[in-house]
Image 1: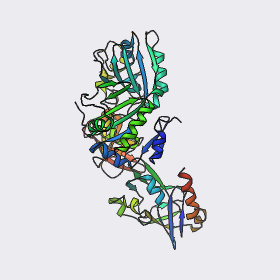
Image 2: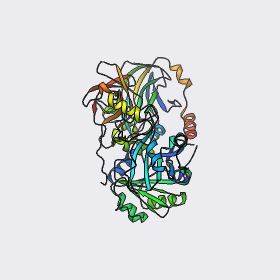
Image 3: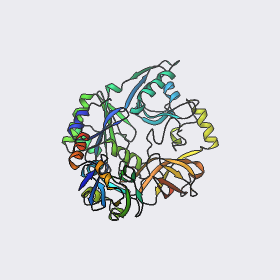
Length: 123
Length: 357
């Protein structure tokens, strides 16, 4: 199952694990990613609060967590090669979180609802 | 929101548009990095029609410009351009600007878009008692910046404008257009001032000839690498040119100008804060407003502009720090969100400009 926040983060759900990254739309809007500021394993994240940031040449954008829980893995490949996010943001995820409250998923956007958010932002 | 005379053409090119200085301006077309490299390696064209223009003429024009401007226009030949600032009486900066000398008592001032209203009011307010005519002309002029090592050839081949006789910071008038060898990128280049119709024609010729359109995104990364200040970052109403390291544009040997006494006192005591260059050790990018700490963790200043430098591939910044921490190689730290990264003071001219002397 795939969910989104209006701030362009996705959460792909497998069992109790949410794999979190940024959408294709956001990766395109940002331009070349030069740094991904990620939390560490075992850090707690909270739904709707920032867990890190993604930086393009122009600006730093906060990353918001779609779910609450504990970070079980960070994508170390992004440390040396942050541009992987541009190339394939759906496969080049940022963190994996063990969810503490899967009922939070009900508040997230479906892919169809998220698509409408992107359309609105395209002017 | 104001627009420039090229607004529809930017939209047609698919530019990412964003507000800057009260105008809806193009931030990027192909991407900041690609546009940045085009200017460093070949040529790019910028719409800078948002800049403001004020003509100052009349019997007291030279005396008046010298009264409001930190640089000295008295020995200027016609066709010369000087960079400098207008100051508040306390030494804070009203704006940084270019002054073009067109003839005896005939000056053309180019000011920042975001400061147009403030500057015009300031100039008019201080003109009391001077026999001058102040003509605010921002609505009548468009402006293009053609920048990069190929700029001279492209000006000639594409626009039929011969700039080979111009050296850095000089200009000439051709009919009703002004062409100057100036820019804000650290590269050789030209700026063209003309009416909207001519500016549109030049822009379309340049784009048709394959010259890279460049947005304000790379204008900022380019000027930053060359150590050039941006009003609002390295200069402001509460930042003096001496704090910004721009003392060579402040002629304290002039008999008088607004802010002179404050700056003379600041020079005697030494500024308490200075703009420095900083290199961060680590992947984090120092951005405007981030805290700069000393090696013990005490706040000693703030980042004014910071980037992952496209040309140098390093994370560098300009920062306004307490003078005690401004010497080259001073160890500092930068707070980037929740983490603190080691940094050190380096020269703020990160990239050596290639000007036509």
